Image (tube, rainbow, N blue to C red):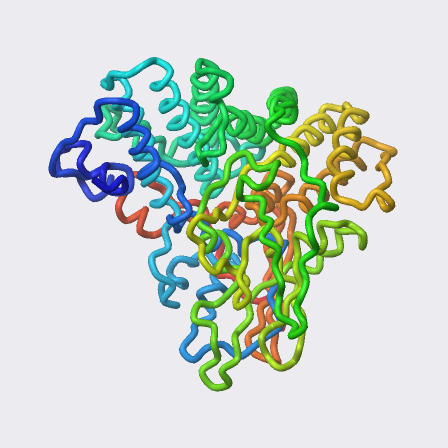
Length: 519
């Protein structure tokens, strides 16, 4: 039996109403797993965000200020730019615009609930399987860790930031694989309630991991682990501004001897060959070749395709390859010092593909890429993102700085930065005030974690500042769109399909249609 087909055979239910389609399983027969091995297979097939699964990211990389429009190039015949414009300019009707632009099925909300359903199915069956306590704890820990991770992402996409309004609507908390007794389970819970469940799941996962032998709490098998859970606890507490807990869990990850910071001096520089084509070193963070990688996840194209290329990118008239519509923003590039090793290892200059020879700053240094569109030649076996050690250092530094422990925050910050510079160029940072340190840590977080899914969430919790995106309508004209300070679109709208299928959902408050502020 193929793993991905196990779940439809697991749970026999009565017919379900349309409003619960995103949250409920469907089945015509029943298959009951008998041991932890069966549940482990179910986890892999239906609960993990595997590298062959997409739909979890899609347009999210278009929202923040780390990207900008690339130099204009004539698009393919029939291509509709609204596919990208909708999210890039924070339109309240983004889903309708993307659908009209033939973008396919866009429903991040549904995608996350599909894998949450997988975690719930495993957790529901754990009491019924016969196996050793150790094997059961391994399965339980994974399912809880994944569910906590998924709800963290859901509530930070569709709910307001916790530190802004914890009582704002979050997302529904679906915690069982069957129909629940509580008639309100399809309604949106508050952001605070969702965070409470995230912590409950992650702490329960931590307890289960601590109940198994120490040498089995992490291994290079692409599964969740104790350090993965501890890093997510650190991140969750950081977003909640519980500085002590954020630092405590970050320190546990930093002290784990399984991992160490990568010295970028030992990472070969990316460049071009004699014909000007990109030459890529296949060193990437989302693999276990990196001593920083704690847990890799996700499909590479899902994470980067919309920000990095247009599908079928060959101009039908000229035969030229069409470059990506977006590149690393100049504002991001300006945060790096010239001799920061990350500047040329995290961000790669690449030709546009036309006859101009123009170079673009492509933020693909962390992605295993091919030579045509700066995406993997074969995504199988390659993950798009990962949780890694450097985040623990940054979480710890930020928490210490916010708590007023300037010396400790500075020490850890310098320990990270030392691995990002040539020894001849590295100088320890010193700060004259707590606020100066905090601002520097925020910029360091931007430099270190760019294009790894952090920037949009960080902007939200750091005050939701105003910034602009420019969109090239054609070779002669450019329109500028502004995201205002505390803009309503700092909280992504719920998909139309989700609202149609669940009458208990209420849409986020939305602004009026976004129009250009200049031409």
